[in-house]
Length: 287
Image (cartoon, one colour):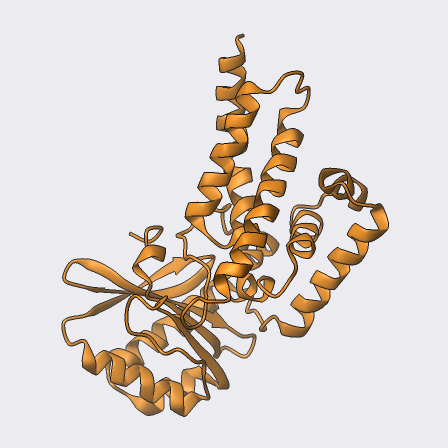
């Protein structure tokens, strides 16, 4: 088997896992694909790689950390809230594993944005993908103690800031169906009933399209805002879909997707977060 054959075989076997890793580290489908492509490009010209899967994991993670350091600067001047790029199921691992599913949710990825790049890498590699602390330390060129502490800090952020998560997929689907029915029926009371009293609504337009530039909090305020949005787009159509292992509304107008609203359902059967992505540059992963 030639080197090209080895790389092609490794590409087929490792690319899905690496995309799942890179997406969790960056929150961007496009960036994840670019980073994994670059990692494989480096493998193609590298000499003496005995364990390509481990080598690719290390390179992809280090590339993602460098990317995050640049992205933190760029996001300081981003217009309005920054949200991860929504992806349909199948891009970053199937959603049949509860831990993997939760780790790719829009709500959790948003919390990860508050982590340092090393904290995020340590948390994702150890807590999500199950790599031992020492192996993560070797990948990142850090001490075992430093990585253990970084992962623990990331874990605390998730515990302190992560919204509650309803594990039952069928129940989440039912809640999303009630939400859509209330919105379609212009029913304020029904919409408020399906939202948590402290529900948070965020919208990411990136300064490209009109979107709320601050978070909206509270069931009545969010409900009134959503119904006003629907009334302002009589040509729009909404349908249920799943993105980032969560139910979502995909809104289309003029034959194109104009927004995706990911719904975070809490254990009490009410929606605790709505993360709406309107920035056209982020809608390529949702058809």
